Image 1 (cartoon, each protein chain N blue to C red):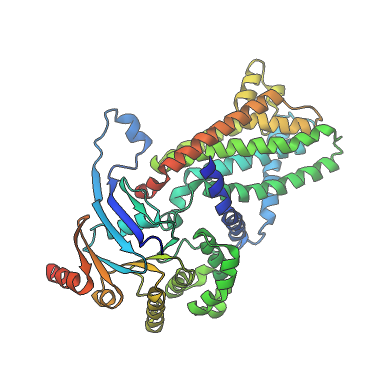
Image 2 (cartoon, helix red, strand yellow):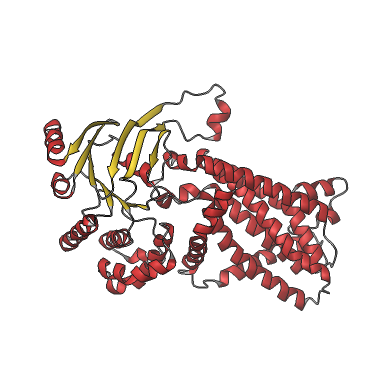
Length: 243
Length: 260
């Protein structure tokens, strides 16, 4: 069993510098250093997620939820503090990892899979399952640009849902496609999540979803943890706060 | 450095697949598809031949092969460097969603541009055959010189990739600079033959592209030994640039996403 935590976050701080992009004109004409505004999106939070737990994150817009998720996925470097994933593989389930529009769906599955760090054999093995789940049928061998937006997100969802990782980070993707696919993807989510080995973090605004799926809830408010604990407790406090 | 090798190994499959995918999507919708990779340098060669032979009335020996070698090397360098400036912004779709070492994106470009370069070089060999160019042992230098071109291009690209993220109009500056370097590199004239000393040596040796192109011509069509000490020096410079670039990218790549 070894370690009991899958994710350990300590004193995490992430800052954005408002004045980041510059142009040559600006830097040549302005000799005095312009003041850089620093915006701190995540202001020093610490928490642990035990292995196999499903944690939901709630909070109003701009409270740092997505930033936190991206930091855990390794896209952002923390400015301070650290995130320890104990060498678990992690994938951020979000809509569409850069599809090449002119390539077919099948080729894009390869491309996304390799990009997410899976081996060719593994992708080959999962290919049929992905295609079947995405319900694209013949379209899988047509260029992605011919897809409707619903088909586009179905494919994206199927790729990330079927290529499994030990830690899954889910950012508001539970509503994809038509009613039927929605139901199916929801069922798939539940199936993925119910695996005891898998640790899941879900960011969502849908109270129903969170209530059904999560073991614990983390409530972020303006970059700090406002409350953390049992689902029912935190959610009712959150709902009260928001109303 | 260890980290670099490990990451290249991990993403090597992706690099190749993505490079191929890029070539494929480039040709997917044009009528002549991959023929453009041949036509493009061929037509440019005609343009420059017209300029040099008819407008200025000054050619070089084996002129079509001469121009073609220059153009081929130049296009590889120019495309890769130009693309790397906007590489992170253009791939924001990918970069904001998964972690990928950013120089892998340069390798993808180098791969797809490298394929075009190989096709072009096949044409050079055909042209040399048609022009009955005598071939000596010196032609073996062809491979190390290509390698140097690769290293120098990669070094410059890594550094431009980094600054391209933060400086929005760097792409404009680079476009102009590249145009200047293009005319200075002797693509359709011989620097040593047309420029007086000591400027010729300066132009030739301080510009890696000019040096690589003229060395390439020396070994391929004039059966001469290329300027080895200066080539080695530029190889070293290329390695140093790459080393700096890789380290800078390792250090800052995770803050790129916050900017774009």
